[in-house]
Amino acid sequence: MAREQHPDITEAIVRERRLHDPAVRLSRPLAEALFDPEFIEVGASGRRWTHAEMIAALPELHGGEDGPPIEAGEFTGAVLAPGIVHLTYETVIDGRRARRSSVWRRDPDGVLRLYYHQGTPVPEPEE
Image (cartoon, rainbow, N blue to C red; front, side, top):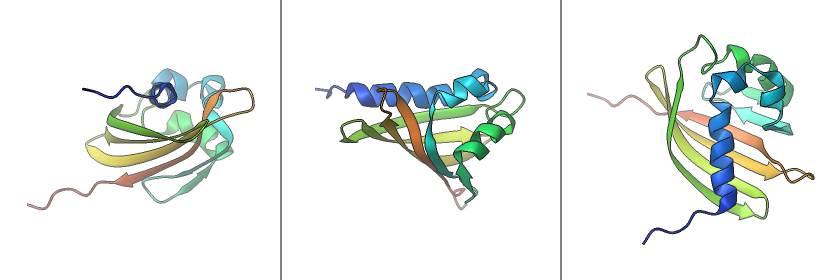
């Protein structure tokens, strides 16, 4: 019998998927609504991104209007504490796979926002 998923995990997955939507990536107000003001990312490249840097760059990054789409799947999640959700999932962007980890936290108004994100490239299989 399948275990029912915690509603906070479901909400975090929905919000994570919204970040992959080109319309959101191209709209500063829509993107701002999803990011915690203290957001930090360690990208698959190893680059560290701040909130301001990410919001400014988001329209030009993968998943934007002209870039390759973000294919995401295999989402799993855990509630670490009340209002704190950890998600893991995998993406394929332009043929490159990455494993991803996100931490979402509720702000004082009760809105779940992306606090931390990290991407790790998956090496190509050796032949």
